[in-house]
Length: 241
Image (cartoon, rainbow, N blue to C red):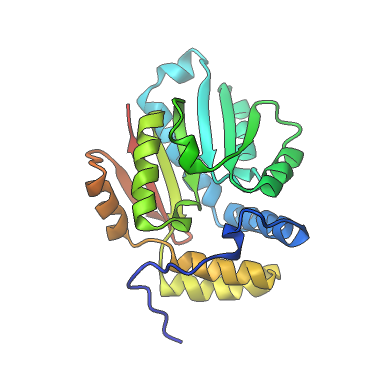
């Protein structure tokens, strides 16, 4: 079956309903995190973060606090990965996860009880970027594709204002190959129908490289790094220092 990936889909995902809750959502959140970890997605974000921290090496040398915001944090797996990484590297991370779904935030908190340097906030990200808060780094892993193009421009402008070091985006490559591979993955992970349907829509709401270059031009990002990563991801690093 031929899949049209010429334009980003605007089809809604079930998980975009911020009132969604229950075991089906919990299962979806945990399996998304597992698949992301298995396919190297956490590594893509962590490498991007390391690149930004290397730009300002004094943060590493004097162990000063490094504040990180994870947008659309899901079950918090990315933050727990970074907390473990900071412990290993003797870095002082203060980690905050934000999500608009209260059930998701409660689940993430429950899974992160052993991590005192992780805080979770249930909030609308469009309201968050209006606040006069500053983070060293803002992360956006598998979240940006949930928004329309004009919303992405608004969000990235806000992220640029609120990040002292930079932004790391890790998101899906819109590809017919990725679409068909994910269909096979659904059977291997025994994904629910909701997870399968949302996952396929997510891929069709993902990005081509030119989409991200176009966003960068509109946002006046003169310096940025854009790389394709396995499995069908783009790593978009925007220094703001």
